[in-house]
Image (tube, rainbow, N blue to C red; front, side):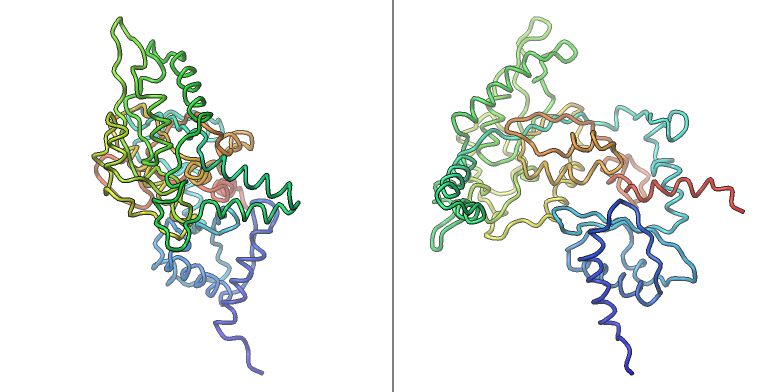
Amino acid sequence: PTGEGNPEVRARGAKYLDERLPCVEGTHLAIVSHKGWLREFRHTLKTRLDTGHLRADFDVEDWEKTLYGNAEVRVASFRWQDGELTSVVSRSVDNALVLANAAGMLGDGFEFALGQPQSGFSIFLAERTTKVHFISVSEGEHNVAVHRIAKDHAEFSGDHKAAALEAEATLLRQDGMATRHHNLHDARLTAKGRKEAKALKGILSNRPSGGRPFTAFNLVVVSPLTRACETANIVFGETPGTYGGEVLPPPRILVREECRERYGKYVCDSRSSGAELETEFPGFDFSELESNEDVWHTDERESPLAIQDRAIEFLQWLSSRPERCVAVVTHHEFLRYLFGQFGDTLHEEDRSLLQRTAANCQLRSVVLCSHGPTGVESDGPRSTIRVPSFPSVGSLASMGSSDGG
């Protein structure tokens, strides 16, 4: 009888990857299998990496060529978001043990551990850190429109799924209509949204930081969507107060495309032209806006992997800035895909606080620590972000101290 060919084995591995592996309870799994199956399983991952549907932090070409030995153990960590596999980390056991024992940071001139690794303390060099205060935008007109239509449709028909589809259609460009002509294009704040921003300004203005008003940031970075600019203008557009008897000037407000909302498909997430925005917000710095027109927005929604990569690129840019205290006015989806990539090693309560869905005009403060990019050798200062180690790597620490027998 004819046995399975490589394509059939590959298809079987892909089915396991898509249907079985995400359903495994817990966070650690051992798979005892055969070289042929593992080879084709690895080939499936390589194909997804090549097509841009997956991200990895290792040399893919070398990884794909390396054969499995007898009784060899390899470690891989998989990350899913919204039911879709988005990244994979692969390590030999020796390398994984090095990462686990050294916390992946020894020798980078950045972190000094206090006591044993399990003590829970670390000291970070201040010049390698940036305090970032992320602020989600206030309520927009699109939020109200979608909620109203979904509510009315559900009450009338009782079909909540159909109601959601009807509400979503409100945000779609109609055939033959230019996106900019839709009444929810680049949606603005509602009256309630403006009130939310004023309330946040009042709270922050009365929250001192080193004797200065809390809103006296070194830099404010804002998304180019109008509702984000409106939020930033209300909170930061005027003097934050006085310090040492002198009136403080408003902070520099810099507009950057990288921190805009997840773009594509929905008209509310397409921006106005740079010229229009600059006319409405003359105090903002639009010098780093890539183009006058919105060249990012299309009828296709930005993929989860693309917005995750964009979020990390934004952190890399932030960490290279000279300012040490920065506010970022951005959007719910952007924050979800940014923070969703971090927190694997945190306690459940802390992870929930970090990754929780942002409310309207909500402040979330973090310290951004720059370790240097993974797998890149450089003699100069490191000023980019390393995605933190995955929990399956850390779990190998006990193997390195085993007495054996």
